[in-house]
Amino acid sequence: MASKSSPYPLTENKNFLSALVGLLVFAACLAGIGTRLFLDLASFWPANALLLSVFLLRPDLQRAATWIAAMLGYVAAEILAGTGLLSISLLNLANLTGIALAVGLSRMLPAETMRLHHPSGAIYAITTLVLASAGSALIGAFAGPILFVLSIPDSLLLWFATELANYAIIFPVAVALGSAGPEKFRVFSRRKDVAIRQVLALVFLGGSILAAFALGGPGALGLALPALVWCAIRFRPATAALLTSATCINLLMAGQSGLLPLHTDMTSATDVSSFRLGIAVLAIMPFNVASLNSAWRNLHGALLHTSAHDALTGLLNRAAFMEQAALILDSRSDNAPISLLMVDVDHFKSINDSHGHPAGDQVLATIGHDFKACLRSREVLGRLGGEEFAVLLPDAEEHMATSIGERLRLAVESNHLVLPSGETITTTVSVGVATVRPDQSLTDLIHAADAALYAAKHGGRNCVVPYSPIAASVATRIGQARA
Image (cartoon, rainbow, N blue to C red; front, side, top):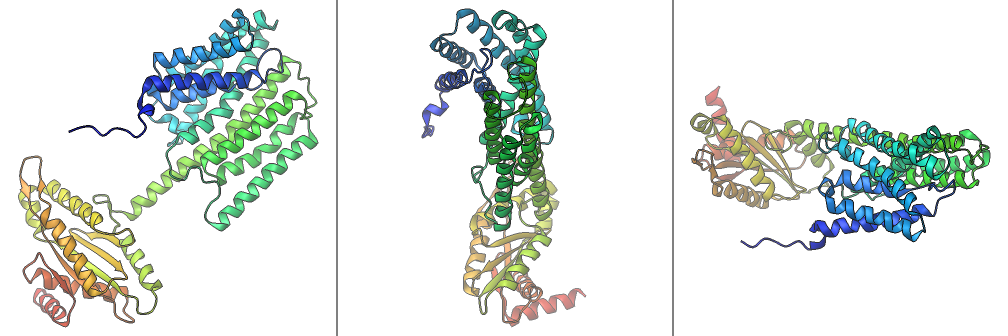
């Protein structure tokens, strides 16, 4: 059989992707070179953070070709800017050392750590960024005295603070944009009350930034922190990360250029280091909150799903089915038809006895899968317990419900389950159908469908029986006989 070709073949070509990473690094270096305001070190250097983000989020690109392409990007940008050979060698050695240390650490961490699906993911991520910054700083401590006439302690602190600020600004955005989710780019919630709170958070953030420029002083950076934390709670991770990044870049460049009145000596390596560490903390805190909030939402969603769904089949459990069915029944318009199917697996006990309970579980899971494939999303399907299923059909008259019940019956009958031992199990189901009558409750509807199911079970099985007074009398006689 011929393999299906991808509609985007270049995205599967590793050499192409490696070259693309090299171009990304080249462009990021040019952008960073334009921000060299203090000494000859960039105020904002996104290249290292972007390259590390690529390596952490796409481990398959941690290959020699990508490293070579990235190094060429670094060197080409510096040559274009007229940087000397010694500076190119020392600066890029510092850049790549930090990235290499962080990549090495990431290989020792649990899989999917950098996707931040677990609360500990943020801790691992920040530790990785700190290690990358420290690795660059170790080389920078010796490069500073040679290139910029700085002392070793000043070089170490300045390099570390600069790298950490860059990583803290860029990496959260890369993680958020690289995460799965069909609505990750949605800014405002569809719910009006939530959207209003999001707008208020944005207004608060804008006011905080204006207040920082108006008041100035060393504590001006902290004024934006509460607003950024609020945004991290209210917005989706991608939006929160972009807001934090834009705010931090704005404050970073304004502080370095003197537009933000910090009242500190921005020609002092110590003061510049302190300022950039403040920016790093300002970026990391919302990232932490957003990561924890995202992990909590994932865990909360998983718990809600578990509490409402049957673990074996993935269908709604009895309580969740009854709740949804009651809501639909209560909200229906006058004379709107609603039907209920009660489905029971024929001779299920003999399947367990003959083939074992694991085979019985597999039968139930297969039936649940078959039912989902036959039904539309608005039709409510649940496993009520044991081998009994139920389907609520909004806007379905009795004849339509009977036709759907027949479709379910045929789907089960035609699906022959093959066990690992090679044995084949052919299963059938019996279906009872009931359509709601005026002033009938959910309990009444279930009793009617149960009565029809009893008639189907004792009328030969593997059939679909609509409710009728005859079906009700059959169910009554069976109940009396059992009593």
